[in-house]
Image (cartoon, rainbow, N blue to C red):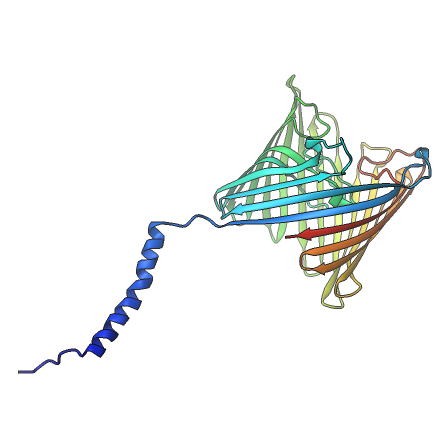
Length: 362
């Protein structure tokens, strides 16, 4: 008969090592599946300090005044389930701290599955496509287009976002008397659907405000945007169908211009029509940003005009990217207007202003 060889110790050791390395990853995977790890927690923080010197309106005198402010922002995320956001801003004046005004955002979001997110608390809510003139003002007040970083569109309430398909997203909000300028006993609810149609983002929605006495005001909102390789068109509007008339329409154009040092100069222009506001029915905005001065320096210029109110404002900014986590900026602003002309609600009160700011992210 055939005589089988007895495995040598060296061969036995090789077989043992092979089995060990083959089954170790499998056993490790089984242990991982049996005891899943907690979702990783990530956090980021940001701080900003701004000092300004400004010239008040003529009736307040010709003496330049100063102001300063500081803001702190924190964000945290636990895997894909929870996310937290908070932002606080203060002017540093003793005895002037108002928690409701200082806390710009304080919210918690929960995502039970990837296509659904529920957010509660004070949060930024900005619907629409406009860069400067928001025409959807029933949810949040308009901001200063020249200084959006110093303005807030925060509201307090509950928001739900649902994405049932790659081409459709649905959003609903409930704001119990939190819309600035509305009565304390008024409740606001809104629904919005955003669709992708032929490479164009299109959104429609309804905003309903109900008072304590049952009075209701309903507004229809809509916006659209289409962007190509180097330019885009966008617009938004609001029309009240049940309540006080408050029609607003905004249209805009964006043009991206390639520049040196692999940079892009972004140019945008907007026009807003306010048929119910006879004092400033027409408003125009022009912005040029991303002007490269060097690898670390960028500049931008912008202008606003309300011809009906004989109002015009200019602003220029130079931003220095010190490093990956630190930015510094210097800006100047000048506005001229006829003394008796009423200004839009978002127009700055100072005739001229110079500001310096430092921002850090860590």
